[in-house]
Length: 500
Image (cartoon, rainbow, N blue to C red; front, side, top):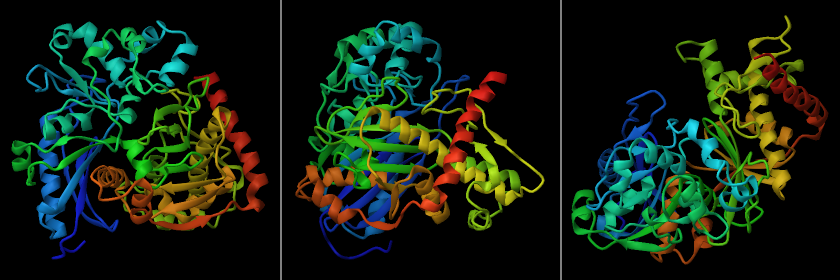
């Protein structure tokens, strides 16, 4: 992106991610004008602990904003709004002076694993499905607070508010303590149907709702940029700051998935299959996540796999220890192998699995290897194994409610035309690519544009900012072979579980 002397209204989208903070600059015509990014570490002071320093987030944000604006050549005075997004499930505890009391616990933290079943035992499965809509997992804010209530009660006693990472950024920018539904619904402390904090869930976690922030909708203005923050970040005082959304909800906005009945697939390190609805579609077995969308009256239900692109990366690094083997060369060889990889099946549970098994101890395997199989067969089996995992997500979503016959697909793995076609064939749905990158921060910027009136509404923001590529339709000629392959795939998990 080349700097431009042109002056035009712009908005910022800031993403407080797990590895870095990003800032994107979006103009009033829906053009992405600049991207800044600055990293920070995950702190692991003990086994299973994962923390981050909120001050490191702030330092990275200030650097990322300045770099993104530098790329545009547009004067900071033209910034009309700031939208926020970030990693979900975290817990930032601030005291009476609004400073962090300790490092933030983030979604990767597992210290609360032994408490989750006990916490959930205080409610019936029906209550959990009705109120929370989700199984409690380690790293969720509710579980982290339950651990703090036992291990650091003095910290909890000093806590004025518990914030999500992006909401801590909002505090630094505006001085306001505030949350919004998409992040709140991922804490396991929030009534996803009523879109408000739940006293029952909070009590089960050993806390009260008094330390949870007021909730505003995602496109609402929650405050204005304070003079001290404006000076540090290189912007003018008084810019509207918009609540924004959790990273998954912001991603959905950034790829244009807003209306009920729309669906998306993300193929990154892991993967998600997501469907939007006008009411919560909760899986009775809680094998899915159901969270509030960034849009009032909208929810999204998501099946998640832990091993998407990371499975192909593992296989590439196994074939080429120095990582020099090109993914395009690998998939070109795999494209010459027939669908079904001549009865070779790969179970991709290299790091456990979520939907549908919710089993962190699940393991992977190649099954059916013979002398006729080559590395190209194994590459194709890896691609197909991830597609079968997505099919498990899709079928679990079908059990919870309607699903579309057409999905948008994004993420790094979706750049492979072969992989897109395999997924379309295995799922039996059409897949349309979303062009561009930085869709999560873009979604935050789009919400900033709506909240600051740069865009009339979200429909206009989507029409201007989201661009689509080619569509793969399922190949009916491969339906039978993939039906057989899916049956073999689904037989492997229980068989491996029986011998572990």
